[in-house]
Length: 418
Ligand SMILES: N=CN[C@@H](CCC(=O)O)C(=O)O
Ligand SMILES: [Zn+2]
Image 1 (tube, rainbow, N blue to C red):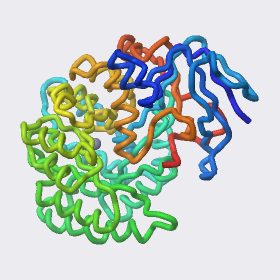
Image 2: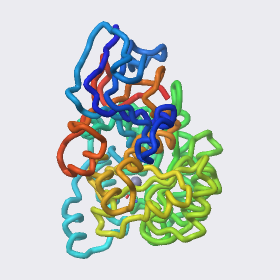
Image 3: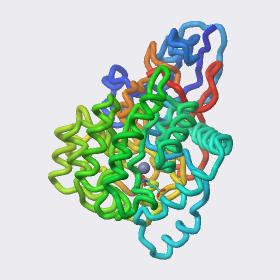
């Protein structure tokens, strides 16, 4: 069974093959095809049920197919890859947000509130909350989502957070080193030992076919009394790496710090936030561009009243820049990638094309995914209710994007095949 999509005013392929024909830098970067068509075939051989792309090109050359759908002159883009979320939590911190809007700074202390609520929730309550957040993201064009633990902070609660996340996506990240939980406040070293020993061991012992976490992450932030310094973060990351996990880092969010340099040195897949960077940090990220992506999370700066990171400086230096939501109950309770794109364009010096590329191709790369719309790739598609990707930021705040369901799919945003 195949499906021919036509009426595509603009197809964003992220494929350099289509970019070559353009002189406009945005069209080159996004591999745009105007008046395009795309054929979706049956599911691939990998057992995920995800249909694969069978053909891409100008509508005038499109082959026949079993079924047809006309998109009415809309833009078709790769589904967003939200490579940084904390969707497994219970409770509410809207009062903390309101206090910040009147000037209270963010220091990570509110994380303990979410930890208490998450520990108190039943498995089914948590599962329902996470599934609803994944569905909310999908309704805004996100077809792939990474989910971190980090609101359990006991062996059992971290494990169950990851198991629940794993039901919805294969892109799961162990964040036992989110903060030092209150019961360990006066013995931080013991908590680092717990994370790097029994917690990691329990995760790996749990894995039937694979560990419930693909990555390990750490909140490396000397400006928060609750988070981890450079030495502690190094211990956490090295322990995860020794057990075969990929590395991700929360770095340089609240002020200058060692997170970015550490991530680059340890060849982390991503270092996220990157709000406060020295010239040496930018140089390190540029040198590491083949391995380490700088993931910017502008919803956080919006929701914490903080200065935005300078994306232009990073891109001009040659850094691989991704965009993600960081959806979490504290610093950004928004799952909207279009919102992140609009902020990046308006506040961070990114062009609309760079922002879309960052939220699809580059965020995908940070998870080991190829997010081109090309033959043989999964049909992870989103439709923009407008003629071009420019409408994502031009019409900020309007719900223009949704994931396209081209065939039989599983619920939620994952698992993707790679
Ligand atoms: N900074 C660390 N973690 C989250 C915030 C978590 C929270 O405040 O609940 C972040 O990425 O911003
Ligand atoms: Zn985060």
